[in-house]
Image 1 (cartoon, rainbow, N blue to C red):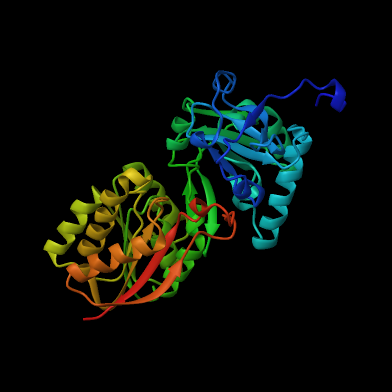
Image 2: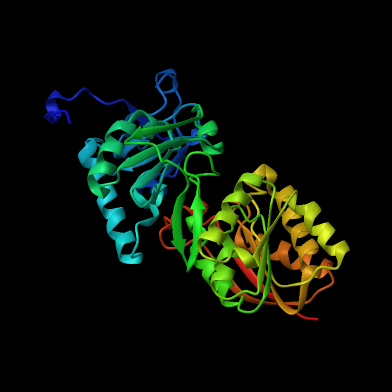
Length: 407
């Protein structure tokens, strides 16, 4: 690590300034973003390289903190540190990652969790999932791409992981103007999928070629609740990925579980997970478009005691909200008739733009249109390794609703 410079020897940082009518109070009270229409976007600011560190000032030229600037993004500034003189180096990353690790070690006995959840852990736009001796980093903001080397060095020092994978894919990077890239940036590449034990089930996570970082840790608590409903049950898990709800249900005594997904590779990993846990005889898969499979199962007269639908984000942003809510309603309408009398239906949404109320209303409409009445038993969110910054509602993206349906 380079020796630190005295304040007087450091090059002056650029300054970005809020417009006179912009709300500085929100920034002072912890809101972490500044949008493009809140800034004085002169030619100097617009010429800054994405990821540049700058001092944010209010309209009266009072410093608010150190931000990262990306003139090409609607979220033009992200707050990094309230100290405008802070040095964003390996020591800075070490402090934040040590705090994040301390929380996860209080929560989980085994090192399989989300280690860093972006703004809530003081690392804007950065996601880190840990799989034992392997960590997968998603540097989804331009500043973290520029400072990946000290971030990775701190990550290895704090956790002792042997391998770090950069997963540079996904919608967020596109919004930041970043290219897609998958690479091992420290240590040896994994020889194959990593086995992860959660809720008594075994999941096979493909860290280099799977969706996101290879496994959805955020559903851990919701898997556990659904599994409580599964003893002796016939289970249908739609949008199953690598067997999320289905394998947890089998581990808690489900009679059978059918996993549905469009990805043959994901279903193969789910089957391998079932077999690794000795549950293969009660597990089956069906590849295909989820809507088409739900319609086919209805035509076939299939019935299940527990049905779970955990689709991708149908409403990832506000322009897609109405279409997304119609898709959630349709899922509920198609799934409800498949639930046996007295059985349960679990519906999930990971859409930022669809808040809990809108998603719950769409789900209830769909169940009603499916000819069923319901009781809402449970409302779940992401697990505690996915903390939410209270000032940033977008962090609470995951919703899970469990309904009991009448005859």
